[in-house]
Image 1 (cartoon, rainbow, N blue to C red):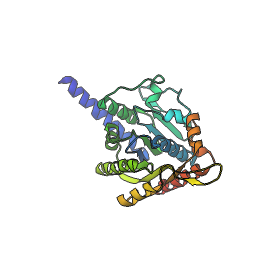
Image 2: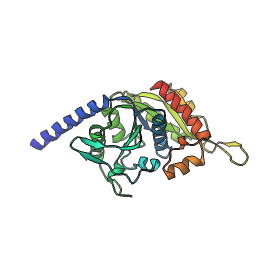
Image 3: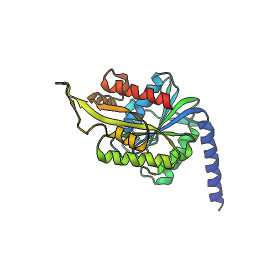
Image 4: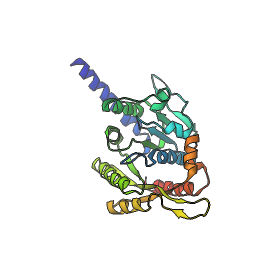
Length: 270
């Protein structure tokens, strides 16, 4: 009984710290999807980086416990975090962007074999103990689906808003609709849907090819009564830049231009 009482007390203290930390964040955005493989992390990383380039103090929380790929996409996978009695120091990517990820605590390629409560506790610690400071935006990259981590983020971050990432295929759209309804049931405001991998322009002839269809995200947004934020076309530079640890928004191409238009809409809505 004593151990249970101590755990409850510790939980209440952490929840209080989370609330206090989030009071210093103007806008909280959770990026998630109904299924994996739609480019959710790519969107989260580039959104956070783009906002930092615009001068906003931005935090990026890698809440995908089993697949913490944010550090790789930013070229900081070898970084390690440190803490003291006052909290955990996030990794600074540039003067405006701070990042936290479980990957900073693990050896390379070590799998995370945790049950739900441990994953929730890790996210809570990131929110409570990390010294984010004053932020204009906190972007949370959530794992795919509607599991414990997504539920925990929604419950722990008051006022968090959602962005749903999908691809044009029917299967992905079914899952994205579930994600939208999931966010609504949790009382989250849904900023809109982003359709990723939407169209491919042949580099040789210039013809646009719809490998995964096109327009499904916009139709889903219309059916659900939410905003369609835009399309990101398929571009090999997105893959190359991600592997090299460089956000693709630093490039000058069709994909980065389309994404920056999406960022403008998010700025206006958040």
